[in-house]
Image 1 (cartoon, rainbow, N blue to C red):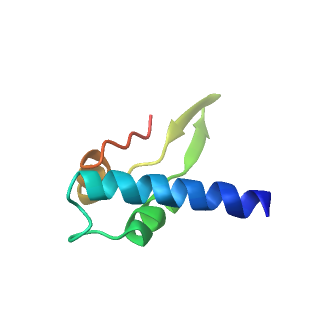
Image 2: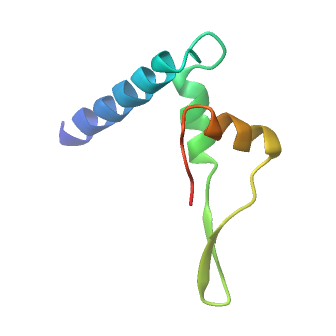
Length: 69
């Protein structure tokens, strides 16, 4: 139940952010959740880096102000 509560809070926060920026007509919360599940960190020469993302995904992340650094 605790995990479900946290998940619903994150979902609501993302929904509110998309609504405030006027992006709900173009993107759904599930679109962003799918995008975020594709982000991965990889270890190269002892340092952690995010894997590459497409230009479209990068633009999609910038619109509501999400960062992946």
